[in-house]
Length: 592
Image 1: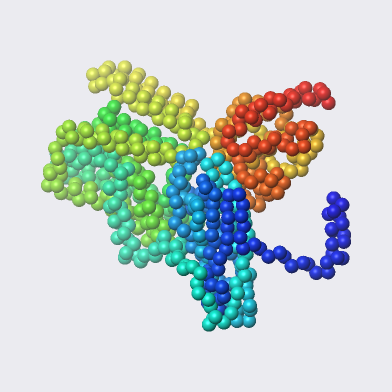
Image 2: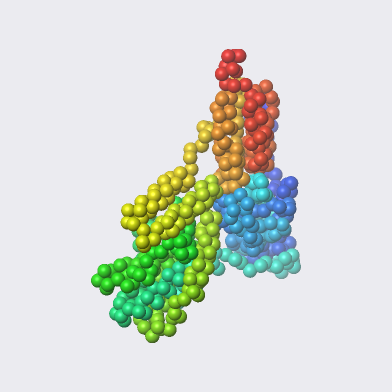
């Protein structure tokens, strides 16, 4: 404290002027990464272009997140530049690599090994009167390995020498072509974009996700061929209507979002809803059981109903809607590009583009059903169709697994158990009864199957439970006071983007035994959130506790100067031993 007081009192008297800030380094090296800067030209003339190359050399098995779309918490590598008088363009990043993250079970885009990021810039005419410009480059993101992540926040600097244009030196490197955002979202005119939307809809019919319901569609088409021309066309158009209803729902949602909330519909938003994903996985399991022949849904029996009944038409509409829904997991690239273009257009034009996608998907079926001669040429039903249908059932399960990868990690085990139980209930529904079974018995069996399916859903598919440990917010003053009073303190450093931290929560802090020990021993349990670089927990993790990354837990034990440090994800056993060695809260109170 005396040192700070002396500095505060006598500092201004000793230094009449503020000292010049120390220049930023052109390179930096840590135990996991080395970063260095290099200018394209040694000397740059006024109103001339140049660039700075930022070279990264990462330690083996470490990586930076490359994409904001796949990076946890959007902790992708970011480059920010500052320099008075210079005009900077967007950084040019290299091609990313695919990386399978074992903790989240997802494919991520990463940079690893040695790679270079280029930052182009241009001087101005006013630089004729200057000799140099100072550039500051801030580098932010998260560097991760299989078991640990570290926040990266470095500042580097370099000086741009400015001289006559005739004295520009040879280039030290060739600048690669820019991969700016404009390359990903081409600006098409309406006469080009609308036909492309129609073609995008056509392509949905060949998506693997649609293949599993092709047997259903084929059986309907064959059944329609036996009907009168008028009814066959009506059933076919009903199927097309089901497809169009799905895209009409998307268009309506887009209108509501843009007019009511000032935002836009982004393809894939629905897959960020865990409940919807789990529901689609369950639906796919049920449909696969149908394709395996475990139960039937009356197709094409519904087509043989009298024209006035309407059951055949409603079934066709539902099948068309289902076909459109199942196309969505496999059509991200096509529909994302189409919708991205639509968001930049007037509302009427964007609605027309979305609906044209549906028209494109429905067009082949409309053509087939409007031409009875084409329907008559379809192959006759036989064993080939049964084998084809069962084969598509396996493919449908593959689609279910693909969707399952998007389920939050803490809910996956429950979803897997429920998928098995749901399959059993479907087997009960279709396999335990037949057409000859008495009505009472049939109702009893099927009602039991429904009760089991619904009841176990509440058991295996709940929303995440409240945390067993009453974590307190990170407050340095409160932690210091508790340590001074001799109270044990447990600090869990975590972050929203840290997959390994989620594993620690699941395998350690969600255990009832650990939670009971924390309560029995009277610990102050603190959750130190380091999601943001400027949070107090993040700064103290680096500057006070000298920890390079997370996950890490610190246990302050009374009587010890330094805390016990628990790194990585395999800390459960050691933490339990340390907690058991502490006196109980009641006994320590009696000693006081």
